[in-house]
Structures are given as structure tokens and as C-alpha cells.
Image (cartoon, rainbow, N blue to C red; front, side, top):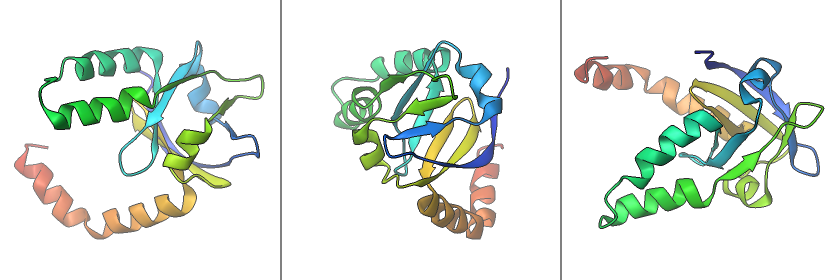
Length: 145
């Protein structure tokens, strides 16, 4: 599998278009899905990865309010996107608002997806996470990682 990895800085233009890192573009041939992510970023999945996730989401228990809320967050906010000739995608207004995206954004490869963050929010998130890295590693070791 060609994984999405790395961290890249990009700009949104006034219409909400953003260039996708060149090494990610080949994985997006045929389109992709962008949706609300966690921690107020956006998740971008290839169509294949999205279909696998969507199947898991729709199988969550309908009677549990947390399941319904998470399914709504992920599925109702989703939008098909395609690369234009310049290798850009158009991020809809409601998703830009959700992630508080301004002009400068960070694209972070997370293996089977990539995330789009407001540059300042990413910096704050990274600083917080890096300062807690020992605690995080200890918790993961309890899970056998």
C-alpha cells in the first residue's frame, strides 16, 4: 500500500481551493472524500478507504446515541472531491468553517488518510502532544504497541 505520510504546508486560495502534495495525488486518482475529522481537522480518504470506513460506521448500533452522533459527524459532513488540473481540491465552506481553516494549512499524512489542519491549530496540537509523548507511549504500551 502506498501510505500517506509526511507533513506539508499549503495555502487555501480565496475560493477555498488547496493544492494536494504531489506525492499524494496519484493515490487520489478517481476522487476522494473529505469530511469532518476529530480534533477539529478534516479527514481525507481515498474512495476505497472511505468505503471500508463507511461500512463499519453504518454497522454501529443505531440505538446508542454516541454511535448515531459519530456516524452523523462523519457521514453527513462528507463531500466528494476531485483534483483539478493544478492538483487542487475545493474544500466546501462548511468544512472550512468546521476546521477553522484560514489561509495557511497543514496537510498531515496519517497512513490510510490525510488530515487538513489550520496551521496554527496544528502547531498547538503538536506542541501539546509532544509534551505528553511519554504518557502517550506508556498508555500505548499497555495496549501492546
